[in-house]
Image (spheres, rainbow, N blue to C red):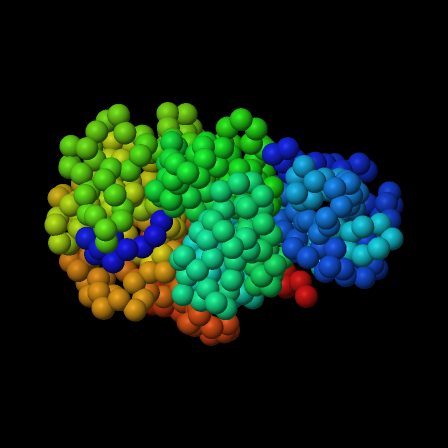
Length: 548
């Protein structure tokens, strides 16, 4: 979504997952069965968009690349995954076809891997050249003592440099990188970005058709910092609205106009390009938007559920989220309307089932990654909700989830959120009126909202200096709020506690390696209450080094 000043104060034939010929299901090294890739020279012309891995499981991971070509003919691509950076101790290998139908992207599901293990991989054209070597990691199983994840959202290429991605790529001890949407922005060049002249877009026009979205992903994927974070860490991602159009819902979007054609066709084009260009284990869209809600089990320590609060179930926002040009937020009766859906019936049933199953299997923590703020938030000016684009505009859906947590006595829930281009740490009260901020009594979960990679917050606005205090005074469950800085969130998880750490990078309008620790908040097991921590935690011991 676009941040507006008052919003915050008042507030295919597509890419197919292919297991190539010659794959092995064995976790033992495979030293024969295909040509060697490691000795080939690196060819960044043929593989101009880098490599990526994602959606790891205990025994497999999706590997991705793209062949840069204008030839419509399919191209055979070799791939290999090994236990060493030199790609000599091969665990699995195969081949797959890069076809024009999938924009010459390639995805393979590399199987036969060992849980909680770092692997290295590459793609190649036989007898020619290969990609750089990537580093990935499978999910752990069984007893897990500690996890560390990084979280990002909202990367507007037109609005600055991806310094946050570069700093995450520098970290060697992360288990996974979570992206909560707005991986790309659909706007035309110069419409929404202060660094537009230095960071121009391709295509120049707004993305509406499949070819537009494909070209925009291709443009993003030439960014060296984005390539490097993909090379170093496996990704688990969901979309938000800008992968299609601003303030999207299931039947339309604020940034979709009648003269731009059929919205459903645009939505299908945007989501198809997303599936093609990201290492995601999600079926290719055909006649409708694919279901990206899915879960990941990190041994007995954490279950991660990734949600779609945008495209498959959401009803149209009440009023308008553009409070610069109009501040109609509707009424409390509209916000609480039991017919209003955020997730849709199928996804809501799935989420409740996942939460219950996670408790039943004995996972220490439950996380869900979603696009917009879940916690209730009161506007300090008009005492209404901050934004009807948040879960506040869909209170019946939120109430049903909160009641499920209460009725099933499901605790240790952490909600990860993006979208708003600012940083927040919140308790999640079932009822603000009865919540006790000092102890957290009445809270059913905690929520951590990460800063944008580049997208505009309140920087340059005089309200930036007073917004955090005003918001916290009206909302005592907000423990931390910062409204201008860019960066990312690191979440460190043990059985005893979860700690979120906010890191900010230097001026995003300049390419820089400056980074600073900003704040840390910790939730002890069994409390659903965030308290400020003394500082950042040390790196996890025993992590495999970065690939160079």
